[in-house]
Amino acid sequence: MARVVFLGGLGRSGTTLVERLLGELPGVRALGEVVHLWQRDVRDDERCGCGSRFSGCAFWRRVGQEAFGGWHTVDVDRVHALRDAVERTRHIPRLATAAEAPDEVHEYARFYARVYAAAATVSGAEVVVDSSKHSALAHVLRWAGDIDLRVVHVVRDARGVAYSWTKRVARPETDGADEMTRYSPGRSAMLWNAHNAAFGLLAKRGVAVHRVRYEELLASPRSELLKIGDFAGLRLLPSDLDFLGDGYADLGVGHSAAGNPMRFTVGRLQLRRDDAWVTSLPAKQRRLVGAVCAPMLRAYGYPLLKEETR
Ligand SMILES: [Zn+2]
Figure (spheres, rainbow, N blue to C red):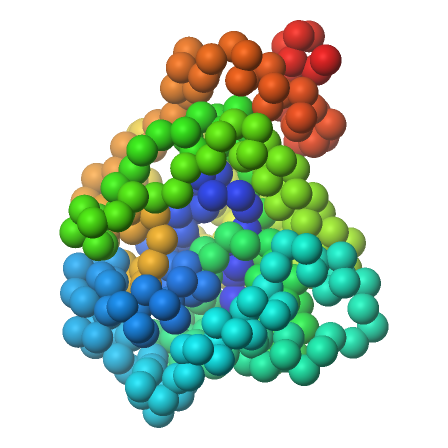
């Protein structure tokens, strides 16, 4: 049974950073955002984290062979139809309360379970990491009988997340042809509440969920990473974290199939908390996000100014 660490949280919360750090640990293979693999890789042949086109990456070729007898046999339209039918935020209440899930949920989850099992076999890793983030997918995977699912829920201050969503970011895997999505602060504040609440609900349904705060991770990467390692059932030695230095991480080549541009970083990555929002997010938007997200910000231990709670 494949042991899967699913990295969840709203985008721009630091999931890619957590994925890159986890991917450096012995016994771990980070796969990127598997939710996007079907379209961006199997169909569009975008770049793997190793720099090769998906079809040219030996690791993913072997995974496709092992999982499906080759990626060409995968019915991507069927995967998308299943995703549209079951993997939607509005379906989470039903997924979380039903005594049994519809067949489509099981069928959709099976595509992922086969990728995870094959990736574990091909890499020899004890743990595979899927950084798909989507809370609805985590709720679907709860119904996969044949994976050992452990969810790492990455939370970042909603105001930092909101500011990040307002910035323009190119997607290098499309050679500059495309930009990452942007959201208004009001929109991202609503999404922040919904997605983070969904991971709380997952924990209530008995799924193993470990919460990591982005800010704490960057304040003490070594101890936070050791805690995640424990949660993932890895028996880490202090020397396994030697790729972490004072304020940096030395990263090797990964095979992340899709996700944030940071998946292409090789070599020294500065580990610095991005607090640009404190000075750059306009006060009005900061108050809006603070007010919309106040209850959960407080629950997660984030400080709020008085005027941000009204
Ligand atoms: Zn690769």
